[in-house]
Image (cartoon, rainbow, N blue to C red; front, side, top):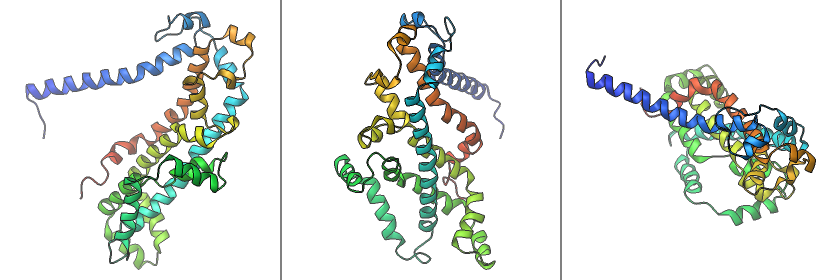
Length: 293
């Protein structure tokens, strides 16, 4: 239906203007941070930098990318995010597929479903989790950051609902008649039809893994094991500049603000690079399972 009334056109224009302003407000902090990272120390210290660099220089990026501590933290963050996302998607996809069946196909489904929901509603707490990680010998390993978040029940329920409402039952039955087992059915039927849901849940998982800093702070007693989010938190929030590994002479030529801005921008780049590839699935994935065809 085409809406051509004056009030509808006015609403459309106002809506576009509002969303445009909201988008600009979201981009301005990132643009300002980029401008500070490219500015010389004096204007940055005087808070003179707006959305355009003053005294353009690449010194902060040269020092950041030449810092072994930062590069190690960047690699730890990338490894943690990639491995954690792949493991999490594998587990929640298999769990969602099994729980998408009814009780006739999967006996005990209700019990397992409530077991998952119970873990989402009630959490043991920080101290029991810390003791468990310590007793399992996972301290100062990347698995202490990955395994506790491997199964996100909320994401699993989103994927489960998509499987139940958007994957035709006839296709699954046809796959069984052709001799396909459960794993072949998941790979050949469910995954191709569920790309919007998979992409959306993967993005949620990836962003959560990349931005998580608190677990690195409590499970890593050695700074060289920090992922990038934890490394940046110690520099920005705690103002511990010892991890920068920059001499006093270099710090006189640089500025804490420009160095921190360059590191924060580099930390934001990986997610900014991944999002465009998932964008075409993201909008459809946001409403996954909401409409039954």
